[in-house]
Image 1 (cartoon, rainbow, N blue to C red):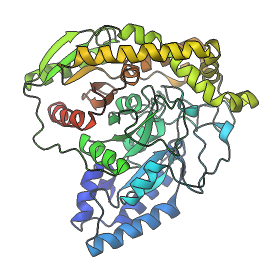
Image 2 (spheres, rainbow, N blue to C red):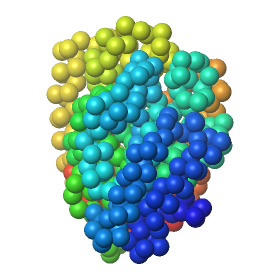
Image 3 (tube, rainbow, N blue to C red):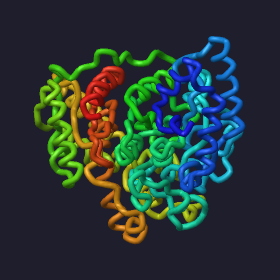
Length: 449
């Protein structure tokens, strides 16, 4: 049974379909692993054993009757603690929301439950999802980075990546078959890359945000963190209530990719070398690689403060200012940065961004996807982040730099492990081209594995 903890969600589903895996025994194995693991309390805010076992029993009965609802029926997954869960505390990593109990599940959780997936519990995250490093010293009402900060797979002293930090750790440490997170500026892709997982940022608007605690709803997206591209495809379909992308026959032969400059070369040595080696392997498999930039991208990046911070602060101002002492100072500063901009600033920034998005679409239309290192840096030391405010700010900004391109341009994005620890390769695809991107990702995954 311990082997189950390292299998992909899709393989577990095939095991259930073949009668080799009992959904209840599978769920019990994951629940026991989470309860016994020394990092369990730093990964899960709370596990939901009663709900999980009830859902597993229903999956067992459907399997016996030949009425399974899909490949992932009976497979246990984790949910970031900003997805509402009926009757279960959902606090989005913030003491500002202490004791908040939703009356209903988030829409995507409802659909996933209807498809038969098993909810193992809620995972830790950066406070209100507004950080890329994954540390959360304020959660729990103290300034100790634990237990609000999950461990990194490669070294628990390093940052796990955020804001979907616990979602990544739950999968990387074998405590969930897959995790569901959110991505506003990189919050699925960063922790996936730093923990050697596959992470999918869906196109904005593709999945319902109903019942999801917001950061900036104009950019908020939902996405899975998984062991394989196939799992990402299956979970997108589960949360949308549709059919998964057909990954059969996916190939890189003749596919045309743009390596985006300077975002691919202006990176630190480790991620840069891993990216270059990965791109060379894609080229060897038949991909056509070109290097260049896209007009307007730097201008779009310069709009980030007015777009993200202004909407975030506008959403949370009254709650924050009623009890600012409950927040981690670095996160509080980021939110309050939204005070610097007026409503005309915000409207003008959005009007300009729409123009720049159209320019991006025209200039990249001839490419199947844009390539760049998922994260330009390696996971920093948590203690140093806590002790050096300037280091925290600079590392957080560079951590989110490359992933933010996808959010600003309204794209879908996929990060893949390169085989080098904590170094991911990111593919950015056109808006609503998620299935096409997943096919490209499946072909690249086979080459990079």
